[in-house]
Length: 188
Image (tube, helix red, strand yellow):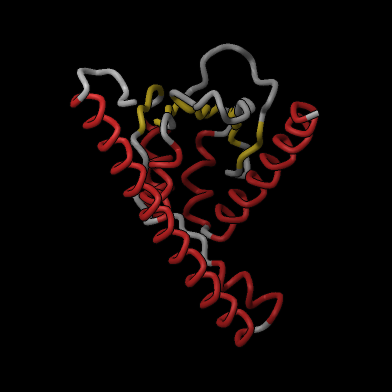
């Protein structure tokens, strides 16, 4: 049942992610201008060391359209993409606080240098302004309130994750210390 649910939800989530990415690209004409010359090329993201306890990721292959937007290609050819980006994803719970703080994960990039340069420019310069999008729907006052609530929520989430990471580090350290004190065998 869980696999069936994942098979339905993962593609739907990726389609929504592509809509969000294209929204960001359309909000910045220079971004689309950078991608237009690469129309027809493919970019593939891969998660290195993806944990087995998480559901597998669908194929993250994207084609660049003539309009300078992205199109998800779940059934892309097996041939290597024009640009492959491998993201270190082996410890997502430990990496989450850094990601929420705006730090980029470790990446390995292979492929077309010009495309890599333009994708890097996009990563450095594209930012989502949720307050601007919210203002279109709920007005400036409500958008400002929702933005404050969101900042507070994500700040609390960052603190909770940082605390959990600290506690996990102490527990691992204490377990290693106890195992070392008893000659490598767990204490009874």
